[in-house]
Image 1 (spheres, one colour):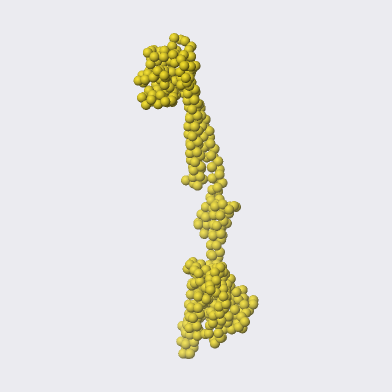
Image 2 (cartoon, helix red, strand yellow):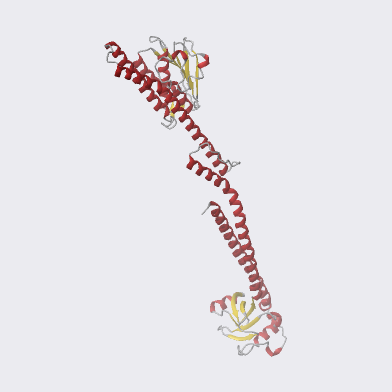
Length: 465
């Protein structure tokens, strides 16, 4: 079942339920109103029987004439007279006299069936009581009123006109309700089609991308800020991010293949020399083997850097509250032991950040290694921390101004350092880590005489005292 069909089905069911509830409520309220009008008419007719006895002797006498008659044979008005009782009964009602024992003593016009139980008659002694009954022509509404002589009069009025009104109302309700349900279904069909169209277009685009792997395929974006519009916009953004990631991966593979070509070529050349050089001297053979070992070491480092750079630093570990000083201290301590250099840390301001500690430690380690590589062996390295900013100062040759924005690119090397060992990925990893933290990298001239390379990442509004 399609989404469009589901929406139409839900709307149709809801409208049908509303029509049913409204129809039943309208039928019941109309029936109650009409029955109430019949009851009011019956109570008004028997009112003369409940007032002062002396002023209604003629009516009571006429009623007494029904006593002792055969209930089945007395089907007309007594004696064919037009007496005062006619004003009570009327020509559209039925009447009968009931004795104190509940037996019918006389019937005026058509006979009818109504309750004459002891409890019902006892209640009628207190006040006129209304009840339902039946006659040969259909349902009737009955009022029971007590007589001074211990008997009762039951006056009945057919409810044919009520049934006729309710039948007409029921027919109109069914007709109007059916038209409403049909109209709601048709309207829901068009609205659901318009609503589901962007989702259908998005589904077609997704299926095309899944079948072809073409991440550059355009995705229709629905205008608006509703759920469908946000879904299409989010999917388009996600697809753009995937396409960008793929382009970066392809570029990384191309760059890596280019960088790997040099050490592999050198290794092949040296191996060929060893294979053909039976007359090589011991010194030359030792030099070739040393060169092969150096190339293998550089190749190993390059592969390790490539693997680390290809890893997505955004998902390595969760972010946690920390300070740059807390992360830098153990990294600096290990660098001191490894390089046997003087490395100092100056903290101007300590602020809490939300960051990934292992990723930040890797970035700081790469900055220190870069400073150690390009500065004299006996020169100190100074690390300056100011809130969310960390800068590593060295006393090397520095970075030319034209290269300061490029040194964080993959495999980029300053012209003067191309002959030095290294993969060209250390600062690129720093850039990747800082970018994952929504930060920025920077390179400038250090007041110590070399380069000042570092980064700045956002901090939270909580200073550490």
